[in-house]
Image (cartoon, rainbow, N blue to C red; front, top):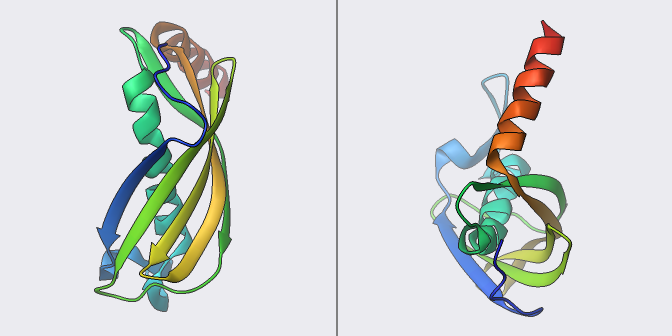
Length: 134
């Protein structure tokens, strides 16, 4: 793992809200706004950009936490800007503060955690868990 970052460094990402991002449950539309599920995926991706730059040959990143506080809606057609701020790296685990905005409107805040691990060891662990579940 390499770490070219300092606390406070930022990565951004944006999406335009579309119907596939709406809050749905069992095929039923709950609300025609950006769902917390889709919001979480985009928030995690915004911080994952740090991990992508930190990985070395044979390493993988794996999510360890996602905390979201949903403050306001984002409607179809609106562009949501996501920002991840590098908080700290403890051992192999990166923690970021994340937020989402539509213009000045704060849509969500939260934190993400991702750990950088040896890819072969992770695959072996997954295989062992899969085997024990059968």
